[in-house]
Image (tube, rainbow, N blue to C red; front, side, top):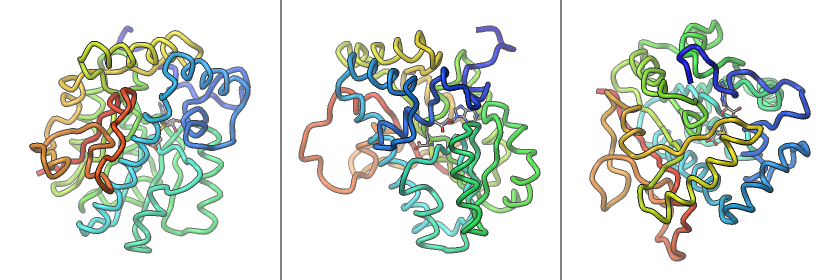
Length: 282
Ligand code: SAM
């Protein structure tokens, strides 16, 4: 892809019922009902090639929820910038962190019309939640946005969430995009990050590639499974914390990032195809 070309998700789906939406398909895997036929077709194709694909969405969402709970409880940070937030049916960032601090500010950024409509509805009932429509792969559009600048104090630590987003950016520009976000964060900020993983083990790579083919070659047009090294290159300048009681500091498969309890059932292959990390900017 040439450097000026846009990834498909940078062009909002608008109300075009012939274009599937990442937010709706992801919401569908999590049990949401806000789907068009074109979204159902994408889900069907993914399920045909990898029947346990739902484990990727569930693993990702569980990671996001636990990471938010951890940061809300164990840091003093009271401002969250949630890029590519989606807005599934329950347990969104503000619902988790405001349980610990009702005045924690959450700015959601997305470019999907369904997400923006849900977000606007939330605004009516919560003075500390904001919804910003912007392209998250153009960091300046987010960082210089008027609502973001008003709601987030960039002189105090911030939690930046990029959860399940950067794999929708085609080409090799993701590290540079993340650098712009990380550079804008004050010291003491945290980053919560997840990304589709190519586990580099033949039978798991095969699962990753089957889903990638449907996403990249289908109407969605993007969804890359990258290696651990490629993902780590997006977190330059961040000191990752240990992901559980056993592993050294770094990323982990989402379901293994400080799980709620012991893993009684073995993880599926698909569950091993999404990586999560939390870290602090020194
Ligand atoms: N972060 C949420 C989570 O992990 O549960 C939602 C992840 S969902 C897989 C990806 C979200 O990123 C969707 O809501 C989609 O609309 C949004 N997104 C993708 N590309 C985007 C772009 N260029 N600008 C803004 N939002 C984007």
